[in-house]
Structure formats: C-alpha cells, structure tokens
Length: 82
Image (cartoon, rainbow, N blue to C red; front, top):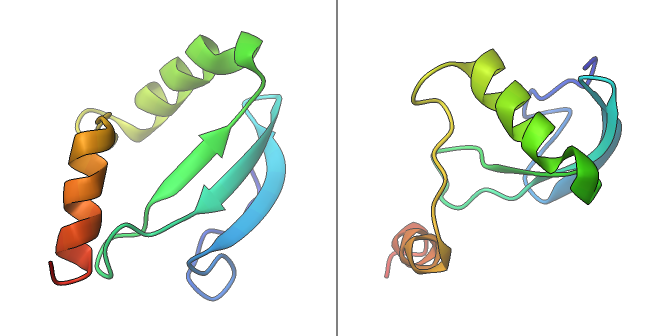
C-alpha cells in the first residue's frame, strides 16, 4: 500500500481506506498503550484468511501477535495506569 503510517499522517484514533495486497481495506489506528502504535485492519470476510497470511508473511515472525478480549482489556488497563 502507499498509505503513510508515520505518526503525523496517521495519528492515534485515525482511519484510512486503501488497497492492501489488491484487497480494499479499512485501517484503524487505535493505540492500546502510549508506547506502541496498534492497528486494526478490516476486509470483507471472504478475504480474511488471505489477508492474515499476507500480513504475517510481509511483517515476519513475531511482528503480529493475535490475542483475545481478556488480553486486550488487560493491555488497555495497563495503558491507562491501571
């Protein structure tokens, strides 16, 4: 994608639409903590597995970590000093 993800172009709580690996997607930047940028990538259901594989392959091992709701809530609490 040609999307610029630098802080001054895609700040926290921003949204952008772009093509990723030839698939139309919506990218949300929603930082969980103040120290690490966090993103949510939304695509049509039929592209879900394909996009997951593209993201894992392009970013490399350990760059993307799936986690559940309980872990997300814990990270959000830590980010708020809780």
